[in-house]
Image (tube, rainbow, N blue to C red):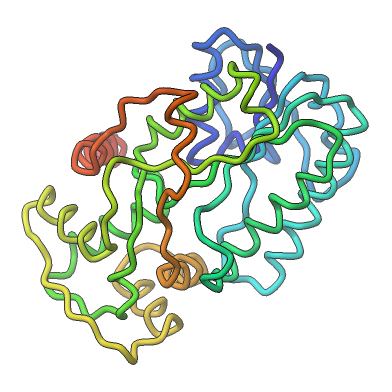
Length: 299
């Protein structure tokens, strides 16, 4: 099948492209800057920007497209930019006759008063649903893997601070998923026609609090942090603290921290019956991610 991957230079996109090639698909990668992307052999690269209608039309001569574009900063206009990008894509993909679109969104129930970034992801999902194609949405919580911004924040906090003062939201339940499992789901649904038009939750085999993820990651790094919760620590102050203690910029830390208040767990496990995956445990996912991270930093 001829398949487009938008956001091909991102954390998920860089892993999805070779997985689709391995599955026998013809892959086009849409990137804004070709200089930042070293594609696997056989990948067609198209330079374009979803915020610039017409600039990416050449990438849409495909049967299916993955939408992996999402702003991860605290800039005031991120929601508007994400909405406009989704509107431009939905219109162009419909006009080009794309048959299927596959979107990776975020877990979280609407009644839980989603954080601004989770609300934006849900809005993008609704915009994509307006297109003349079959939309398949996979919703995930934190994805554990090297280069994942959320996981990188966990690693740096767990490695640098023996004692952490954190907001009570670190007690919020989360169902992390290993990046390899997420990729298996993303590739798998493309080959199952009945997943067209459906929405699925994906997650790993364990529901953990963020505090437990910090502790268990710390164990793999050789020292388990002590975590103290303080009810008055605001998301803004927490984000400044993370920006101070890690390499994660405040503008990125803030939306990550704000999202901690929302439970993000799998409510609907139908996909497990359609695309069977032997799910990776959190500790195994951490081991793989840390090994890749060490190789990257040592290179």
